Image (cartoon, rainbow, N blue to C red; front, side, top):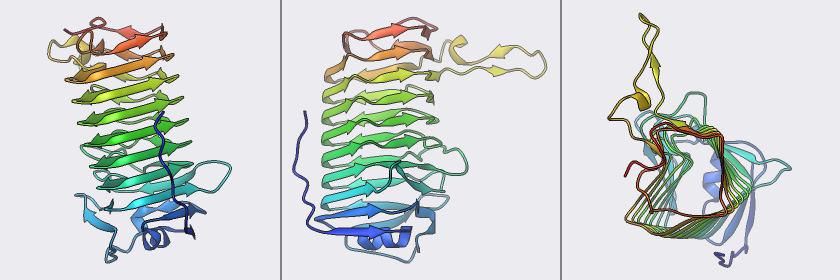
Length: 285
């Protein structure tokens, strides 16, 4: 269990995106009282702990060099955090410590993301806690980490993402507890590279797919996808990592080329497989 202390010395209520960025700072809890549409941020704004950068088709909010920040949706159901740029992340965190995200529903609107636009991106961060939240497509993926130590995601959902479920790079001590990963697509879905101690506990992987086929409009025949020798996408792609484990998980109704790119890179404990199609087999190698 990953544990760290959250300092809640200051509480600020916000009702829109401009109030949200004005509230960003250390040692505080930002209570989201309504939908936060990040596309409405005044792009001329700047602060000591955030910047607004161009993401090809619009602004992207980066929160940086901050400690003890809690972002909490205050409602019975998760509060929405939205962004419009398809190529931008919903929220990027750089060089941050002790960050909590609780009860939020984050993603892109109205068009599907492409190329680079995921939901939460953590770079050079420590002690990240995500609780009771939803990360959805049209984001390209729900979570990406780069050089992160201690991230715990509890009782949360990643669904409908258009390229991957998540990418974990050069990170350690990552936990997903009682999470659901449903209806995501298109390439290797869970990508774990050069990581140490990654656990999925009591998680559900359901209705995810990759290697999608296309229909020839003239012949009406399927082509591409797992039918092609060059398409080898898997549900899990684990590389150069130590102790990547699934405990008490369920893997159901997935349709992918492979379950796992390389055999013996993933430990399975009491994990149930049901009604999956791994079109080229369990393992590529």
